[in-house]
Image (tube, rainbow, N blue to C red; front, side, top):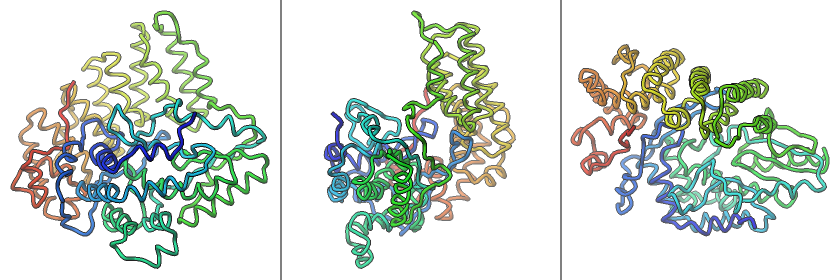
Length: 503
C-alpha cells in the first residue's frame, strides 16, 4: 500500500531536519563531487552562532539544463544557511503539522517530492530517488472515467516564490498581514529566507535542499484547495491532472491559476498541454529506446548494437526539441554493459564529441564513461583540452570547472590554463572557477599562479558583499589570521568545504 505523505513527515525529527539540510544539503549535486558541508555541520551543531550581519549575499552560478539552456543556482553563505536550518529545526513541529494538515484526506500522495528520512544515507532530499514499493503510482487508478490529461507547470517557480507567502501558507494571509512581529515563528522563517538572498523577498535559491521543503509549504497549501475537485499528481512544480472532459481540463487550469495567484505564482502556459487519452505512461522515446534489443547472455554489446542504440538516441533527441536528457538516459543504460573493443572505441569517441556540443552531459562523464570503461588519461586529457577551449569561448564556467576537476583527478595539466591570468580571474567574476583554478594550481604546484590567486583573494576580501559572493574560494585560500570573526574561528578549527580528490 502506498505510504501517505503524513507518514513521511512524521518520520522526520527536528534533528533530522538540521542534520540533513545543513550537513548534506548546502551544495547541489550539479557540482563536481568535491564539496561537503558535513564538517561544517559538526562544527555548528553544538554552538550558538551569532550572525554578524542582517543579510548576506550568495555564490551565483549557472548550470546547463537538458535543453542546453542555463539555469541559475546558488550556494548560500554557510552561516546564513545554518541560521535557516536552525529556524526550520526550531519550528519543524509547526511546519510538519501544517504539511500534514494540507495533505490530510488525500486519496493518494499528490506530491512526488522526495523529502523523507532515509535510513541508508543522511540526505533528506534526493530528486531522482524512487521507491515504488512505498510511493506506488496512483496514475492507473486515475484513468477510469477520464478522457484527457492536463500537463502544466509553474512559471519560474523557485525564483518567483515570495518569502512572505510562506507565512500566508502557514497561518493565513490575513493573519500574517496583521501580525508583522518578527518574533512570531512564521515571521522568523520569512526573515531567515531573506537573510540568504541579501534581504530580497522574492525568490528561493535553487540548489540548497532546504528550498525544496520551503516550496512544499506553499504548494501543499495549493494542493489542499484543489485535491477535492481534481485527480492529479505534482512533481515539485509539474502537474499532471486526469479529467473526463475538455471543460474539466479548462476548469482545472482556471482553478490552478487562481490558487497560484493567491501566492503570487503563475502557470507556465508555454508548457501547458491538454492531451486526449489513452496516453502511454512511458514517454515515446523511452519506449523506442527500450525496444532495441541489448540484452544477451553475456551482457556484451558489439559495435553494431551500440551504434544502432546511439543513432536512435540522437534521432529521438532531435525529434524531442533537442532534449539531451535522452542522451543522458542512453549513457546511463550503456554504462552497465560490457562493450566489445570496437564498440567501446566508437562509444567513447561519440559521447565525448556529443559532450562538447551538449555540455549538459559533462557531469555524467566521470561516473558513466571514464570509470566504468577505464578510459585512459590521454583520451580524457585530449577531450578536456577541447572542451576547455569551447567552454571558455562561451563563458560556460560549469564546464570549465568540470575540466579542472578531471585534470586534478586524473593528474594532467590543461595547456589553455596558461592563458588564464589575473585580469581574466578578475573579469570572470565566478567564484567556482576561481575555486577550481586554485585547486588546480595547488595540485600541480604552480607557485606563481598560486601567488596570483592569493593576491586576488586579498583584493576580494575587503568588500563584505564581494566576500559573500566568493566566500568558498576566499575561505579555502586564506589562512587563519587573514579572516575575521567566525570565519577565522572556523579556519582555526580546521574546517574545510573541499574533499580530497581521489582517482
